[in-house]
Length: 544
Image (cartoon, rainbow, N blue to C red; front, side):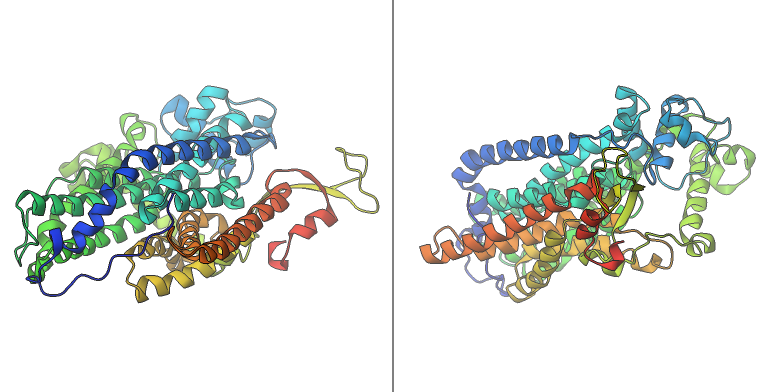
């Protein structure tokens, strides 16, 4: 398992400069074609990925159903999921439903549809767990558990693809395994873990397409015995299956929560930039700019356009039933031009989306406040954690409390592992210099992805935003940290003393992160603590 190899040197400007077997493009592809990587290390990497997924699943499984009640926004999504199972659309529930569900009453829905403000896919996944295990705390959290474990695996695959190193991929996966926020979001029936999984999977597929695109250019040079493209544009590479896969996955991510569309838009732009770079590296010269429209149009269709019908299909149960909110808008407006153009069901869905958008951007939501709202500016350093569930002031003798001169409590806090997040924030700053100074694109991809999932919230920061939204950031910043630690460790052929010193630093950082996760574990899992023990884990006043 090699560490992060050095980046290839910048491509030459002149398209007619002799390039060995296609020059830098070929040298990059040769690394991908190394027999050891393709055979021995590939299988080893998949075995390790599976092992991390299983370990992550098991440590998240412990006491998954505790507390046996609806936590935080589970009150929305679990009930929506249960009504989706029975009716295909979300129904309203009485105000007393939460308490009655905890006692086993589950058929409490009302006859009218509920106005919901997020797409249906994540709720359908929650519903799958409810179908398997019932409308109980284990059932409605089971899907989050499964996708939280798979989340670890897809981060490993993405980080390995970026770094060309199984060690670094596994290091990134380890960080997600012991990240407090990823842990908690894998044990609660919210939509964000599903969105994060599909988004990272989409970026991973995009990375495979980037390699595949360059590989096909290299194969063209080999097949035609060319040193480089000699200033010509090269072959048209219209069909790109991995880009289509990325588009499908982005569509599914948007089918969980809309903010994934920002990542889709940015990676659509990056596709054109990297296509142009690949052709320039292969020797297309000035004609490489033609990639903006010649490759760009096909890429737009296969990435962005593909995502749209996939997203619409996530609403299929709403479309094929009649009782959903706004479902009859098209029937009530038969003369509307949009109804005549796309039909009643789709026109109704469009109208519904207009109302959802108005909710997210309107004056009402902007005027709301919440105890645990957290401005996005503070997310990278955990400026404020999110309180998900709490039972305070448990008296000595109650619920196993053995406090002396103190009381006990049980909490579930959405808190990232501080040492991981702080090291990752520092690593992003270091990686910016590596990306820009050394022109190493591999650091740029996760930085751009993390920035997109973060900065996209700033225009809406006047409404309540929460730290747990940063679950979309951590897979990319953890990957950056793993890659920077790979630089610290150094290449496998570095002098022994250099490797030894690097290994000490990497090991120390990893041990600190794991120990920190173990320390905050009680506040993530509803464990009984004295108030003093809880305060030891509340390092800043803003966390209380």
